[in-house]
Length: 546
Image (cartoon, helix red, strand yellow):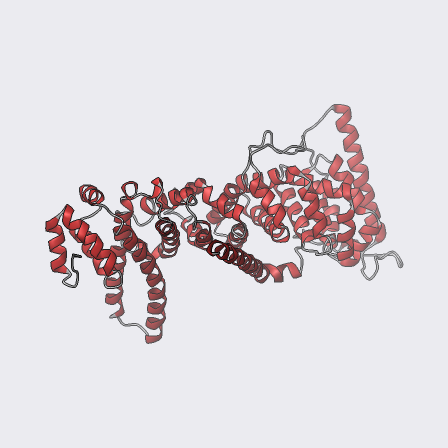
């Protein structure tokens, strides 16, 4: 019955997590999506508005139908002639777009933001013309512009429905994700996002993407290799929307990576794509976005990672992702923000480490992070202030794993104290730095400062520091009472323990954790009676258990 109750509770927690994730997504990007995501347009021109023949204008605009006919006809002719020329000369290289045609087609791109123009282009079968361009054109610029025009047209609901139901066009659009041209990839991502945001057609695209194995590889390739932050943000929004719409697709993408996907377009896709895994690719994109300090893109990817934590497979994928070390390696640079934000994700591990056998890889990852990267001996005490959020998150997960092993009465090898003695040193160092910061805070509070600013600053500081101190003390108390005489002797030998460190630990643990401290002192008395006696004198309230 207890196990059943725990499972029901865990199920309810996951449901609430996903609801919170979806709510945060709607609040964060709902306004942006309500206006749809139109493509940025080239500078407009009024040349085509002059001397329009009566009856030649498009609906309620002053744009000339004849001018549009001539541009689209020229587009068809140029693409056809270039294809014939390429076949005749066996030429495969990219072709430069004629300047006059580029100017004209850019005007069409600009004017396609107008709903009347978009409807006219639809009536003129422009999507079919663009389909021919995608299939035949060797000009990346022309492909980019045509995808951009489709993106503007898709902002009209009726046109979006027509485009989405066009199977050949839909497949060709997905193939553009494997293009090597960044501007084309950006416009393709915008087009996909616009379609996914139309509820009437979103399922069509989700199903189409699910049936196209190349999409996963191409999206992962973009996230893991692109340095174009604007593209990374947009492709991230596409992935975010996909995962929010379809949990099954998200699960499939999490599980992929063990086998090579097929059906890559031969001309545009990278040569021999590796076996991608979604979590490392997401984090690589985050790394690149952080170097550009894009808060918008950072939030998008954090929301994707939050969505991953709403399913067991996602939590396990993040836990197994020892490649997180590539972030830790650059911890003291701008990437520290990544870890600060990942605390929300780490907290979800709690529900996954409550049974024996779980948590080994998570423990290893966070143990190495805490003991070897965060709050190091050569760091100034203020570092604990800078890292307080990620420290609290990391220690909360370590504490949950450590406590779960005690509850179930079986301690796995990876968590036994003889393998984790540096953990004590690191925990005490955090408390020492917090004490030092507390002293400096008192000194600075004596300096002239407005009362309101002083209250606000102190309240915020006390709140975050109290959370960190509570978590740190809880874990340290559990660790101390697990130490054997041999563990303590080794800790003293390796300088993980000494009188100064023990005094700091006792000062912070008492009186709340009196029992664990007394248990530790009893074992310490067997290992080093002189040290135990000194500590008893310094803390008279302590007594050795009989």
